[in-house]
Image 1: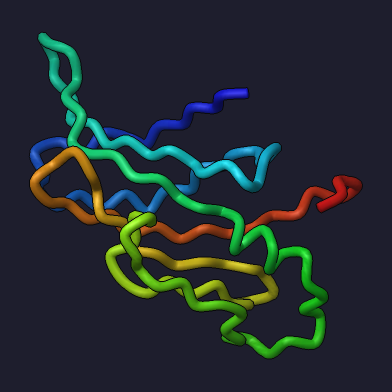
Image 2 (image 1 turned 135 degrees about the horizontal axis):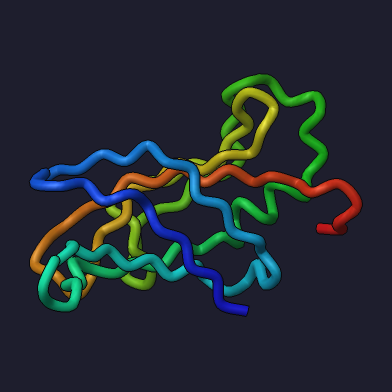
Length: 130
């Protein structure tokens, strides 16, 4: 199942900030989420500005843990940038405000340079087994 979500368009901004929530239903936690950034063109096809993949296995594994007694800010796992991932720095899976979250900076590929800051939040759907 392929899911596509889009942010709003940020016009004439070389360093856009979205602060938008995009939700995806996870059916295969071992498959990465593919992210592609485009610029918008009025009269021609939109240009790809870079791609990245988000490995959700770490946040999925953390969501399966019993964290009911964890204190706010507890770091569950640290993921380091290596050649096979798109991380631009250390990424931390943590317990924050009663939720499992992961902050990350991704390096865009297929482009000279570009970074995108992402925060993942695992939302458990009642009745669905992890």
